[in-house]
Length: 166
Image (cartoon, rainbow, N blue to C red; front, side, top):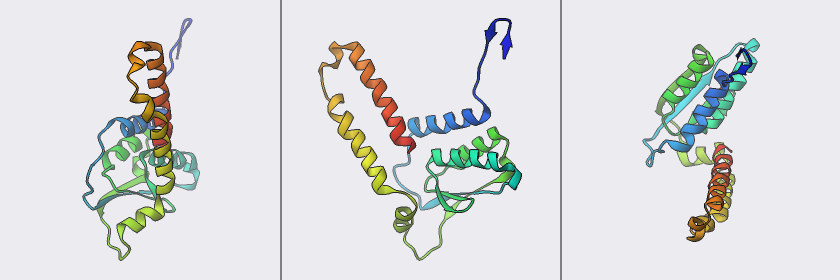
């Protein structure tokens, strides 16, 4: 908006949903044990709503969902509320069905996870992050250089964000 010579900016609903998903992913504690249940999300958009469908898909990817099949997404943690909030913010709640429950299959869950998520790639990214920043954060001389400490923390936050989002 513009009032006189002043301009005010805000994120779009989609931008805010993406920021919310990313922020929660980095700051909220994760489940340490698995309850054996999955969050299943089914997107059912009309063909003309392609842009909205793609925005919702991107939010699900930020949340860490894997694609089970076309329009069907899966996550091992409870993401019902978070997905519902994002769908509401985007105004697409009627096109997003959410379920939470156990899976009935002869295929072990570990095999499903290995098939749907790139665990080796994730491991390489996190290992690279730890190899890069682990030794730097253990140095005791950073307190003597506040500018260096700030730069390191900023670099660490940016790199972690990239690692966690991929």
